[in-house]
Every structure is written in structure tokens, then in C-alpha cells.
Image (tube, rainbow, N blue to C red; front, side, top):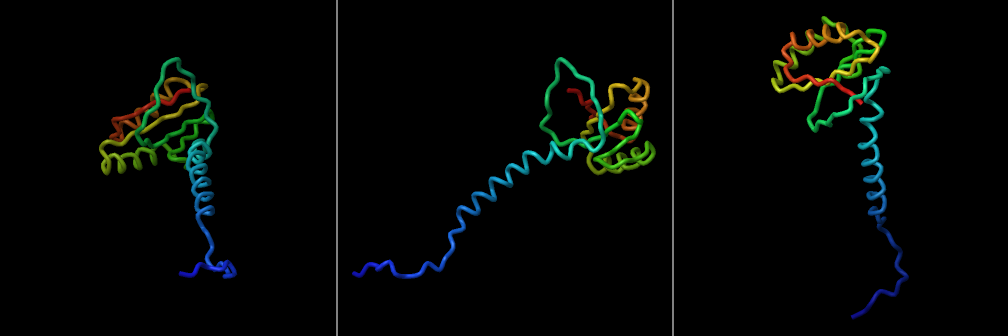
Length: 130
């Protein structure tokens, strides 16, 4: 039995450390991406003393102080919102929607937007608070 003399050239690249680093970077991006992309519009939601986080996937609706409505980060009108939500509610009856409305908006305007969402067939609506 002969053992190697150690004079042979190493021809293979060890990719294990590279894979480890890429996986750590991927985990960091996965953890921070929702925090970065969550707010396309600046909305100051009111604070609540008692709230709980949901583990279900929700569709985000933003209603800012300038009365602009955004669905999933894209600006839309109330009529377009109703049409889009109607199609989504038919495709997914268990659709969850989260509404983030600015705290400076009158209560009646928030209720009117909730009416549009309910009229589109969405039954599971949550109001976001801090």
C-alpha cells in the first residue's frame, strides 16, 4: 500500500464554505424583504393595547392620509379595487385582507372602503394596528 506523497495538485474546489455563506445571505434577505417591501405608501396606523399577529397570508390594502388606495403596493381606485377583489374572492373563498388606514382619516371614509371590500365578496378582513 502506498500513501500519497502530497506533491499532487489539488484540482477540485471546495464549495462548502461558499454554499454556507450563500445560505446565510439568503436567510437574511428572506427575513428582511417583507419589512422593506411592506410599506409602499406612508401610512400611520393607530396603536392598540391588545393585538395579535396572524400566521395566515393576507392581501395588503393601504389607505393613506392623501386618500390614495393601494392594493399589494400598487395604486388603485375604489372601482378597480372592487373588481380585483371580486375576482380574487371568487378564485379563493378563504381570501384574507388586511387594511391599513392612516389614523388621521375620518372613520366614515375607512368604513366606506371596508364596504367596498365587503361588497367584493371578501369576508375575512383585518384592520392593522401597531
